[in-house]
Length: 307
Ligand code: MEV
Image (cartoon, rainbow, N blue to C red; front, side, top):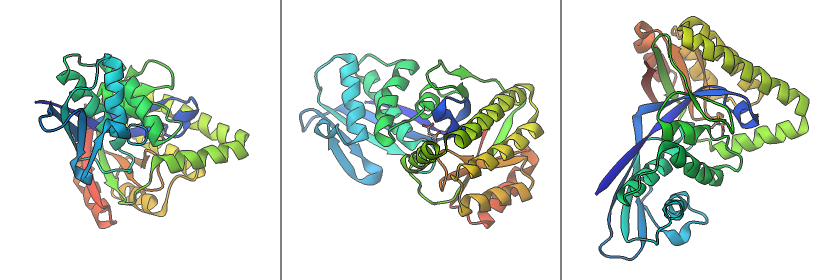
């Protein structure tokens, strides 16, 4: 049997604007994983995938409309081998449609486990390209940031179409992540932002540029370990995400609760309108911010850091 995992991700700066060519910063969350187990199939022909969390089972015949079946099909095409008899089980601790990259992580875990089991493990860049193809099924115009972060498993400065750049931190960054519990598929918010952009190009492009500028400034502040500055930049990024109309009452409630409890800065993370927010904290405020988010109604709270 071969097992492989891929982490969740958080976006620190630049979601949505990254789809339009602006830089963004994102990091893996190793405390939340998707895992795939591959073993030889004994009671069936071909590849069968069990997604036990949603109690579903797929064969490759479903590849046109199922992301996991499509992932397995792409692995076989990439390795140029005929369909083997395999039994694959995929599980994920990452909640769906919550901005944490669950779709990319399950595809990455599956492609990694399957290619390793078949004796040709795919390196991160090839894995990422393959998962990017599958991401297009989730929402038509992904930037590629989710597949990049979960496949490389590193904090990255990402610009669409360029080689991702690992970023270094001048001082450890501690984050508290709070889930609104509201499911919000990325496809919807990305589609709404696109419609907004189509109707008001100049206005949206100036917001995208402003977000890109914050991401570049944040990259510098992160390298220099200036945590207070990073927090302020996160707040400024959140204000621009509000202008793009991808925040929500539930996100604002958690973001304000985190700030009032002493977070250095807070913003939504991912597609928005629901899903998760992320707060940057000094380690001595971590517990207080976690508690404040719970009191404010977060469905789930966890911490993660970049050292
Ligand atoms: C989703 O995690 C991030 C978005 O910017 C979409 C994308 O980059 O593909 C909202």
